Length: 111
Image (tube, rainbow, N blue to C red; front, side):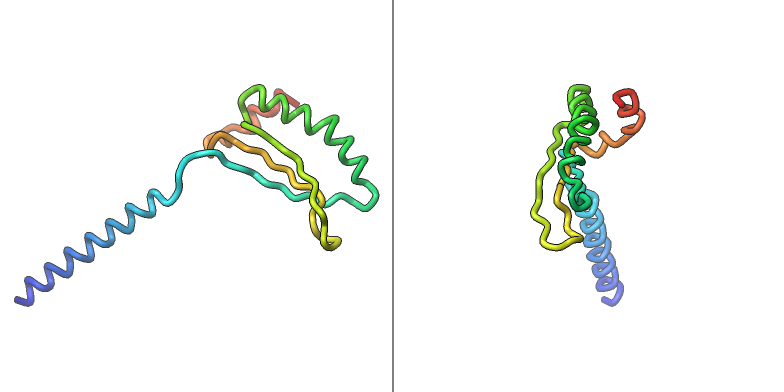
């Protein structure tokens, strides 16, 4: 009788452990990846920084989008509540995590 209870307990533990591991393997779904960056400009430098982005950052991201390296990008203004808060938010959307493989090598020719 003790052996039967011991075997039954071992079987239950083994089954519950394998179910838990199976759930952990699928704790996510594949899909787009959004990278968000928060930027705080120096006082009085917001307009100059926006002109810089318009001349360098925007053309680079537009080329990356045309080349299929990124899906989309955006820049949002934010209201800073204190001097440490960001006043700009940059987002870049990638197709999936695999898009990060050799990302630098694919972006270098665009620069």
